[in-house]
Length: 293
Image 1 (cartoon, helix red, strand yellow):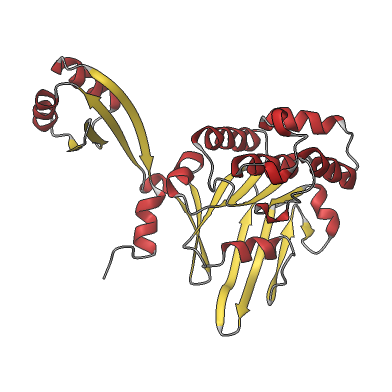
Image 2 (image 1 turned 120 degrees about the vertical axis):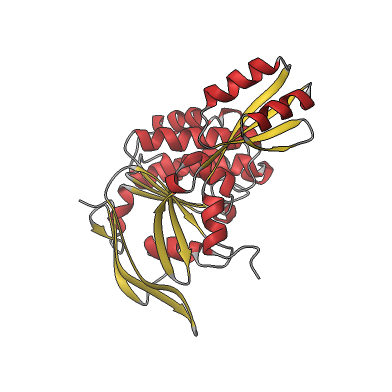
């Protein structure tokens, strides 16, 4: 049974075709990122998958059932933006309502509250929540029924570093436990941190690609003695550029151990070393012709 089965899905607004005969099947757990410029139709696509908006033609099946069958939401959740929240209700009120709809025991509220780390403000009214707190509540509401398919519209938007790290960790754990996740995002750096499986939405078409062939690994190195390190990087034919605190080194044919050996050989004091992985940005630039005249 496919977790998600889309067949010839189309949608137009007046003379603008947003979705053009999309066909897609996903039958395994994992994380897929839905990527495209603002206004390309990512939210429309998710709304149609969950039958919040009608398609002009085509069909959608979620976990083996038509998306028009409301019972499908026993195993499917859709995390929308925070406009679905009520400022005058508490976080607990929202979670209690979802539990009641799914006929889940109240103990599930405490379990999910602890899991997403919102114990401190569960009883506060949502009008007093920060953006990050609202995102935590939306996630808690979306996973309280332990869905097999989880759809998320910009879940990483506006999160502080601590919240973003927590969100990535939770999404990874859910995928490892068997949940299929599709998340829309325009934050390509965050996309590269959570998945290599990308669904690019362009000109109404959905392009499913894996980022292995586009992935690049960089190391940001902060050092005290830049001239000696620069000389060795050049001598060993590393691809690098100078930064304020040191260097940004691209690992190509060389491996990480070679870079460590070189740093040790230089005798330079390494103050910091951070890894950066890119992949979706390069492919995005090619597909959407970013910076091209």
